[in-house]
Amino acid sequence: MILAVALLPWLAWPAGFAMFLVLAGCPVPPPPVTDGIVALTGGGERIEAALRLIESGRGGRLLITGIGGGTDLATLARRADIDAARLTDRVSLGRAATSTHGNALETEAWVREHDVGSLIVVTAWYHMPRAALELQRAMPNVALYRWPVWPPAATSAATGTARIAAARRLALEYCKYLAVRAGIGEWLSGWRGPSS
Picture 1: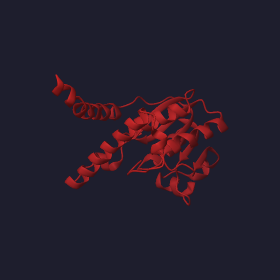
Picture 2: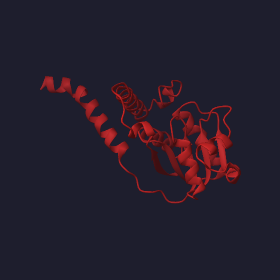
Picture 3: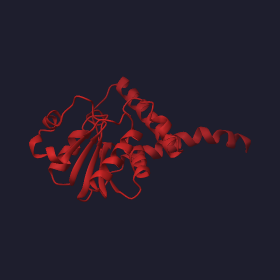
Picture 4: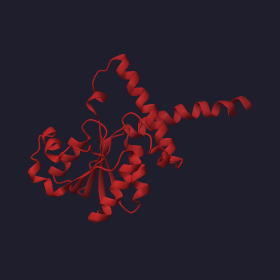
């Protein structure tokens, strides 16, 4: 009995990690048309996916949160093969956030400013559980719909070194998710790990 209790923490982490991967990787139904869309930067295809969503009429406005200082909409739209001129008045570039917690705070301020009641959240599939949790806590009255993005590296054949790096990134993301669940996400906001 004592041995079983001692082993419990060692068994709980891998079981929780496996469940995290399964739930994060589950397909989601297409979201309805919403008041807004938010894209959390930090990995491939997130911004492009969000720009395609707003161009197709899925949301009224778009916030790209955590964008680098010198990047402009025209550059981002070119990467998505979209005409930026048609979107200029509907896209906001948020430059203050440097973490997922910061993304949630920046999004909450934008939601208040634009009276957004429903939001499509665009981020990497493995980042979605933590991002959605942070956003939900910052905006409990806003309906959130997930639009997970699968970066090209996640679907291509990878070398052994790339697989090890990906496994490490996923394990780190799970640890960050657990920290947010435990209520110490704000503490994590000062530290940026890989692909936060």
